Length: 312
Image 1 (cartoon, rainbow, N blue to C red):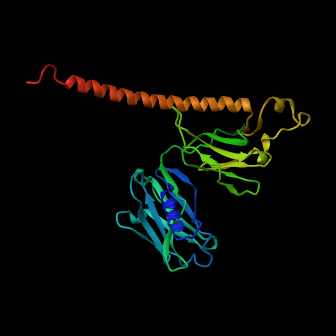
Image 2 (cartoon, helix red, strand yellow; image 1 turned 180 degrees about the horizontal axis):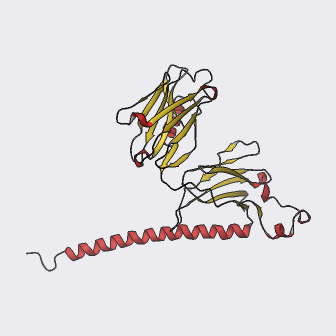
Image 3 (spheres, rainbow, N blue to C red; image 1 turned 60 degrees about the vertical axis):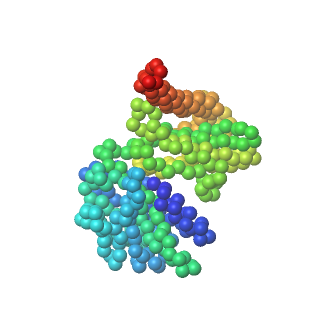
C-alpha cells in the first residue's frame, strides 16, 4: 500500500525537494455488490485544483500498478481493459477534493487505489505525486473496531519505553502514530510492528513502541489510530500517578480506563508482554519445526533412492 508513496519520496529527495502527498480517506473500504466511494484531498493545490488532471491507479497484490482512469475537463476517461460505466469521478472545488466511486463491487475490484497528479518542479521538472492510498476489500463481512487498546510503560537504561497495543480489529488495514503535546507526529525512536493475527482468530492486532529519554518522562505523548471503523487516541497522561485521595476505591485497585481503552501498570505489562513473546516464539518454533521436517524427509527420500552396493 505504501509502495508508490515510497517511490515518490525517493524521487523527491533525489531532486532535493519535498512535497506533501494527497490525503486519501478512508484507509480501507469493505464492500461486496455495493458501491464504494473513496476521497482524495489535495490541500496543496490552491488556485490550481480545477485545472489539475487527476489520475487514479489500481494496485493489486503481486502486480505492478495500472492507471485506471484520469479526470480532465469534467470528464473521466477510463483506460482500456476496464469497464467504463463502473467508475464515476466527481470534483469538489471548494474542498480541493476528488471522489472516485466504484459501482457494484466484485471480487476483481479488490486492490489498493491511489490518486495522483503531475506537479511541476521549480527547475522545470515534472513529477507524479501519489496519494496515501485506499484499500478496497471485497467481503460481505463488516468492519469491527478494536476490542482493546492500551498503553504500557517501562523504564530501561535511562529511557522510558511506551508500548501501544491495539487488539482484535477487522480488516487488517490500520494507521497508528505517536504525537507530542503540540499534536505533532513523533517519528524518531518509533518502532512500528507488523499487523498479526492470532491462530484460530479472524481479527488482527498491532503494536508500536516509542522510546524517549528519562528526562522526558513527564511529557505527554498520545497513540492515535485510524481504522475503517473509526479512530481513537490514548494519552500517556493517564500513566502519571494520581493521589489516592482523588481516586475512588475501584480506581485504586485498577488501571485508568476509558471505554475499552486501558493504561496499565507494570504487572499487567509484564503479563501482556510475556503473552506476546510466547505467541511469537510459538509461531517461530512451529515454522522451524516444519522446515526441519521438510529437510528431514527430503534427506530420507534421497537416501532411499540411492542404490546400495558397489557400482557396476
